[in-house]
Length: 64
Image 1: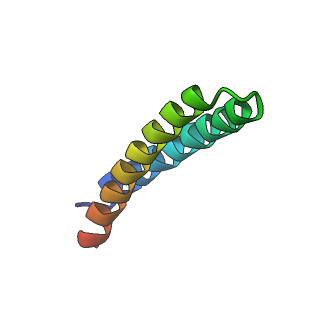
Image 2: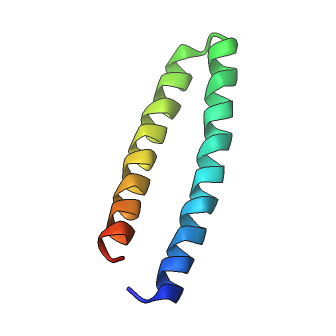
């Protein structure tokens, strides 16, 4: 991986993290509103996305 590709991937990961933070805030609102089913679904989606991000970070790390 060249430096530009690594930089681009890191920027993409940062954008995705910001999106996940907003989704987490929405889940918190669902919990506060006692919409546990919807919150559970959102949290499951967040878990999958975080696992994907962890894989992307591991890939970058393995190429350094």
